[in-house]
Length: 334
Image (cartoon, rainbow, N blue to C red; front, side, top):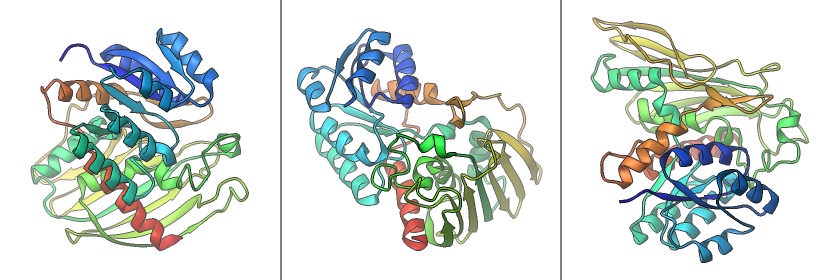
């Protein structure tokens, strides 16, 4: 395969990051957004074509290899399916969709059209996350007994102003927009969730968002392990912590920092994790920060997969499993 060609659907803030890494890994041919000024501005920066609708771009740019979906969460399924049906591979931002049914329809469409459906799960590339996953796969921690996931971030009123964020139809909920990467790591490292129980509240965002801003969840995994999720976007003034603590019968580890970017604790029988790389910085959005900025590694893997030189880092099935777990939680707490 020669140099891979890309299009971007949705030209909001995250599209800027995609465009940068596309430029490093292929050719950006076209972008689209219903706010044509946003599309035009991004197109001018990267020397490509701008369109005011996805339909227009699909009709005009059949040569594009892959479409990067950077639209609101609630539009991921429709936009991805349209691109797959037009014979493009798709890379979809998290979450894959905001319900399990839509994820299934996306996967079925990709299979039918024999196209790749990639999903953004960039926190899998965080150095301490990779190291702990490897240690667990090697049996270093023994049988995993329990886990604790803590997600303590800040999202103030300004974050939601004049935005699709906060809408149940386009955002989906705090676990989808803020913490789906963390749920993915629970699944990837510990395994699938059998059942969930919990409570949620909207303490500080009444009239601002249509769902919870804090929750406490108890989980039972199919493996027999148990766990908890304690999450909020009400940490005072700024993000506090994103951490995952894992208790096995041969070891205990805690991945912490604000973004699961630091190995804060380890005590493993006859083994020690050493020589961790520094990793990338967090996504900086001005007044707030997001998860670790590993989109460069996602794009490198994507190109290698399409050229037949690597296995996929996160599949559409992985994206579905994250959504299934969040679905289980929301069915319980809503």
